[in-house]
Structure formats: structure tokens, C-alpha cells
Length: 145
Image (cartoon, rainbow, N blue to C red; front, top):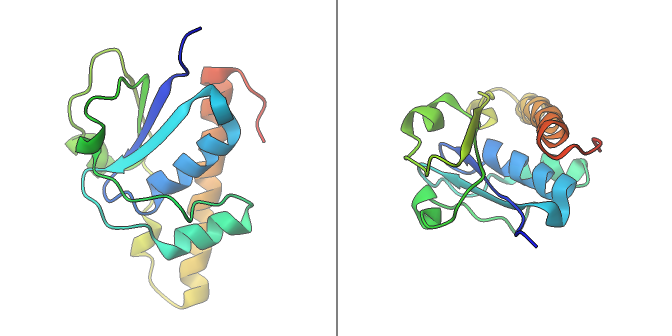
């Protein structure tokens, strides 16, 4: 039996957008894939990302902010970049990895009141969730959650 495919979600700091997608893909795919997330830098897990995911029933509180170099030896089937900076700075992966890109706004750069900032996090979370559902449907033939 073949091992499940490895998926890497890559963004700049591995604190928000990649963590959101990591959480949804892990929830949607379960044992059908091994999901990793990393950044071209590490900024630590954003507490607001943890909060808005918990609101949607996904616990990412135990995630860590990892540097992409930590996974250099992992044979990825998919590399998903979720911001333009990560796509531009993405290290070279073996040619067998399918690279997909979608630029999501960085909610960590949101300004305003706490309510306005959380609204931006929720908007990006919902966009990431829709993207995750589409990715799973297109590449794993699964029904969305």
C-alpha cells in the first residue's frame, strides 16, 4: 500500500495563512494525506489565527511555526503557496511536487479595532476554507465539509 501523499503549505512566516490551510486540510483529509506547513521565515503561531479557527471547530493551538528547511528531505506531492512572497522565495523542490499558488491577504497586517482585525481574520479564514474544500475536491475527489 502506498503511503499517503505529503502536502506542504508554505507562506512567509508560517503564523496565519499557512496555519489556517494546514488546519482545514488536516480536518478534511485525515489519514488520506500528511499535511505540513512552513514559512520561508518563522513568525510564531498567531493567537488570532488560533481563535478564528476554534470558532469554526478546528483546533490549531498545538501547531508550531516551522521553517521550510526543516522539511527539505520530505518528498512532497503538493506544495501550496498561500502568499506571493512565499511563491517568489519558494525553495526548489523535487520536480515531482505539484506546485499550486493562491495569494491570500495577510490578516496579521490588519489594522483598526480588535473587532475590525478579527473580522479580517475571519474573512481570510473563510477564503482559505473555500480554497481547502476546492483543493480536496479537485485532488482527492472528496466531498467538501
